[in-house]
Length: 206
Ligand SMILES: Cc1cc2nc3c(=O)[nH]c(=O)nc-3n(C[C@H](O)[C@H](O)[C@H](O)COP(=O)(O)OP(=O)(O)OC[C@H]3O[C@@H](n4cnc5c(N)ncnc54)[C@H](O)[C@@H]3O)c2cc1C
Image: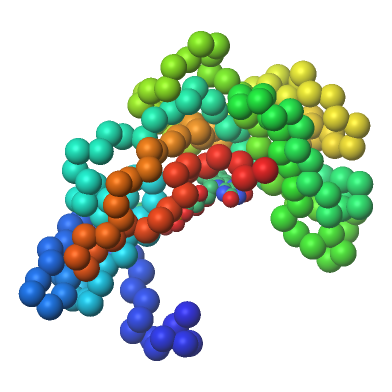
């Protein structure tokens, strides 16, 4: 992107805080994480692409409730595993929310040895009868131990993939809540808009 737009077109390390619209543009206020100083950018338009907890969206829609959680957790890991079938196959097992396993290679199987790096996701329900609510109090990104993951995966019997290997070889396994947001009545206000981001933070696409 820098090559096409010029070296000054991308600035990293700025935490967006707020904006105001001016007569002929929009002014965005940031915190420069490298030195803690405020930073300001003037532009023709502002597009907020700052994720499900978007600060731009919060300013545009101050009364919006926090994302809701459907009671489903996702455990995610990455591990080397022998080729699944032809090494290019995607595993999608189950399908009911909270009872689903997905795994797919994330490196070219022809460039890997006998093992391929596999990204895997296990959905599991927090507890039955959970009603949609605000995100779980324990937050997001809890570390799941290999032993816990082995226990969670133990009820899955899939002939082409060794789930114990996946659990044991994953250098880190994290738990994410499946969050959602209701659609917004509008995205754009003058020169500012929040991006048409997918509603869910980390719902497996498969
Ligand atoms: C572990 C994991 C695996 C996933 N796997 C898949 C997958 O395989 N397939 C799939 O389709 N989806 C997947 N998802 C979901 C997918 O990542 C999200 O739906 C998608 O990234 C949302 O894109 P986004 O641009 O709206 O937000 P994000 O990708 O969340 O990007 C927001 C960016 O804004 C930055 N930011 C936040 N606040 C500020 C601020 N105040 N100032 C400046 N910058 C800020 C963040 O640091 C981040 O870089 C996965 C999600 C997770 C967590």
